[in-house]
Image 1 (cartoon, helix red, strand yellow):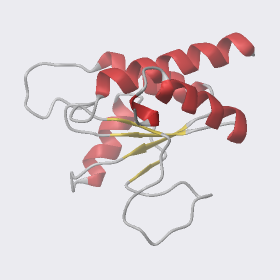
Image 2: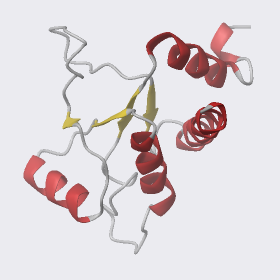
Image 3: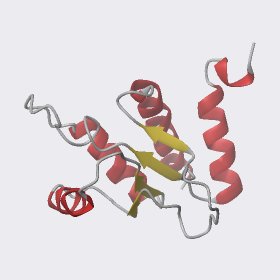
Image 4: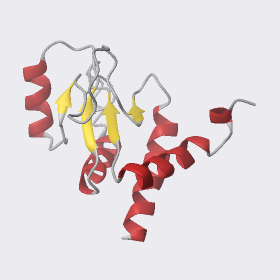
Length: 131
């Protein structure tokens, strides 16, 4: 079986990367991950609170989105106290000309949000317990 298809492998990798680098980069989608794009009355409070927790342990939070109105995203994140270290940009320590941004984990409604959410939540709890 492929290494990262083994249950628990993604969490283990996050722990290893945290110990190696002392912090992680969290990428998060905007529409339907922290913002109610379809206007269904959803709040996305669990994901937003997880990003706040990630920031509290020193992680960078980068919005990785196809949305084009960066001003709206910045204002929305500020209003809702969503940590935002940039939109579609790499963290300062990662230099590349590739259009893909660097991240250790992605929170995205279309890309395994439930799995990423619980792995990141477990990692944050682990970090809080070792400090």
